[in-house]
Length: 298
Image (cartoon, rainbow, N blue to C red):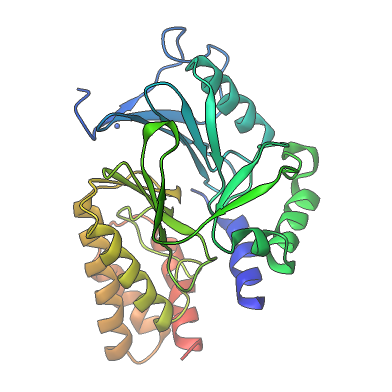
């Protein structure tokens, strides 16, 4: 639990697209597709097989992302925003879709779901009520005060790992997430997209994603599993939408970390070697902290 708290509290430091199937379309704030008053963050929409995935990049202090899965007749919300300004923008956009909400899912992130029933992966209700997650949310409340939404008060329902549900006519399969993370799910959405805690985009990782070599191995296993689903869109609660090629890049990158950890004598040499191997890759400012974590943990 202590490790989970350290990971969670560290999230405070995070900073965090032709309309063909699987491609991103930025949503302009016009009356045709969303509310004119939306000013916080930005939406992208992906047209997939029988549904649309609305991606809300909140651009909040923690770089969170939220989602709406739009079926033929109804909607699913996934990871609703925490900050009030983002929650208002999200809810206004949600209402503009003119369809009822069939289900609200909180996988890793609690948000502005109020007293609505929350669907969560197996084991997460216990975690969010435990000391690590509760401590994280209390810290957020102290840090940001009235800027964030109150904690949800609704009932929770759990979905077992390796099982599927079909709200709004879209199949959602709950795959177990990485073993070094909260016990949330990698959710396979309609066979086309995967939601994970961290999007596998082309950036350097940080020590919250994996702070030791066991975590690196866990993340490689997670990425290989979601790649094997055959999905072509990969999104996360942190990070930008990614492709299957990005997942393969991330796997190769993590294997490079393994190689350098075994070959470099210390954190400074590791930092220099990794940044030299990936010149210009975003997130370089976090490599030193990652290196220090990897060398102090083993």
